[in-house]
Length: 113
Length: 113
Image (cartoon, rainbow over all chains, first blue to last red; front, side, top):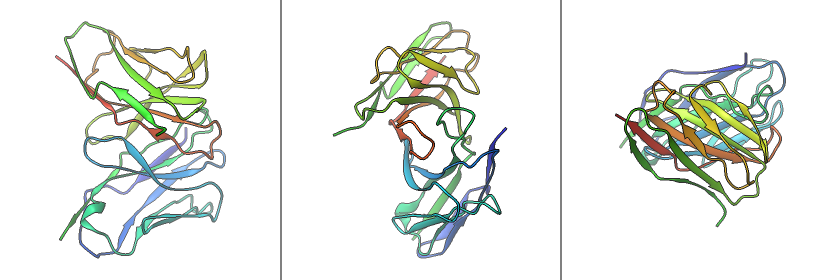
C-alpha cells in the first residue's frame, strides 16, 4: 500500500540554523501532500500543503516543493527559532481511504538558543 | 469560532470497561476521522466517515467502534476487546476531496489500568 518515509530524528539545531527534513512517499495515484506540526500534548496543525506536481507550499518561513519525479516533499526553513521545536509529520493523502492521510513516524526537532 | 473539540482531555479507565471518546466539529465538514498515536509513532487510522450514517474501517479498527448519526459528531468507543487501549486519540475533520487539509482536535489521552 501507499506509505511515507521521513528522516529519523531527533534533529538538534542551534537557533538560526538551516533546516531540512526529508520526506519521500509511495503512491499509486497523485496524492496531495501535507506537512503538519505537533507541539507537546496537542493535536496537529497544518503547516503547509501542495496539491499537484511542482507546487510549492509555504508558511511561517517553511517551504516544501511537490517533486513528482522523485516522489519527495522535503521541508526546509532558512533560519529556525527555538519556538519551532516540535514534531513534524509529512502526510500524503490516501486515495484508497477516502480523504484520509498516511502518516509517518514524525521527526522531532529541537532548537536551542 | 469554528473548530473541532474533543473531550475529555484525559481519561482513565479500568481494564475490561468500554469507554467513549467525544468528537464534535462546527466546521460543516462532511468527513471525519479517528487516529491513534503511540509514543514515538506516527498516527494510525482507526475509522473514517465521509458522510452521515456511513463509516469505514481504517488500518487498526479491531476493538473499536464508531457511529455517525449527526454531521457534527463522530464518537469513538474503545471496547474491552482492544488489547492495548492506552494511547493518545486524535479526531479530525475535513471537506471531502484529497486536496483539502484535515483539522485536528486537541486529542484525548486514554489510560487503561
